[in-house]
Structure formats: structure tokens, C-alpha cells
Length: 117
Image (cartoon, rainbow, N blue to C red; front, side, top):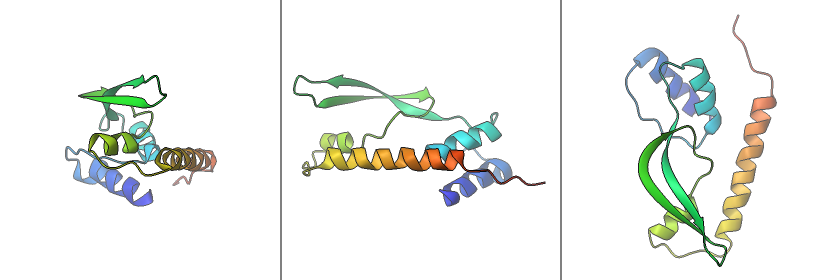
């Protein structure tokens, strides 16, 4: 996460070039958007979500940029759309990874921030 943050901050502060920067670290995106509100905008691809009778989700990607961060990652759904075989426990693994990411993000947000004098 530190490397992603440093690279993006360098692009914003030093290079100042237009950049499409894609990350799975929402903390990087939100913190730098606060620091560089005129230069950085968080966007995600819009989607619709339907729950089938059997409880499975059906995601339809709309291919439209929408303001804000995506609420979740759709790795398993993308794999299904690509025709990859489902692995046993894939949804459970994805849920555990998402819970871990949320826990790490909350720990990072609650830790004291270094400030330069």
C-alpha cells in the first residue's frame, strides 16, 4: 500500500500528468483525494446487481464511470463471466479476504498519522 500511495502522490505532486491509476487499496484513494481535491477524483465502473431465486448474485457491468469508490470487488463474478470454472469455497474465500481488507483499512485509519513539521 505504501508503494501505491508514494507512486500516486509523485504523479500528483511532481509529474502532474493525467493518469488513470487503478488500485485495490481504497485507503490510498480516499486519503489522497482529501489531500489533492482538485487533482484527484475517485471513480468506479457502474454496475447493477440482482439476486437470483437460488441466492446467487448476477452482476451486470454498465461500462460507465461513476463518482466514488466501488463498494466491493467483483473478482468471483468477473471469473464467472470469463467462463472460468468455479472453485469450491471461492465465495467464502472472497468474503474472508474482503473482511480482512476492511479490518486492515480500519486499523490503518485508527492509527496515529505521521505529520511533517
